[in-house]
Length: 71
Image (tube, rainbow, N blue to C red; front, side, top):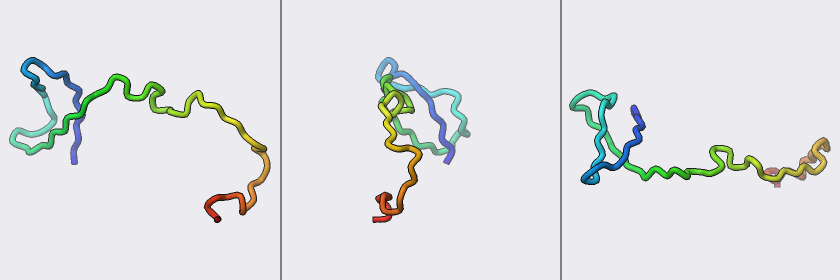
């Protein structure tokens, strides 16, 4: 699947016009339209940035019984 992303603005008559697409004339394509929010994620891609971090005994070894996976 060859995907191509284009941002457009709804124009007069509630229409969207796409120009200079990288596909051949007569080629079948699928068009999916999603609302683009300008406030996608206020923290950006790093959603944990700026959150508090606290390490409890960071240099202590971890015993096998402490791992939740082993239970």
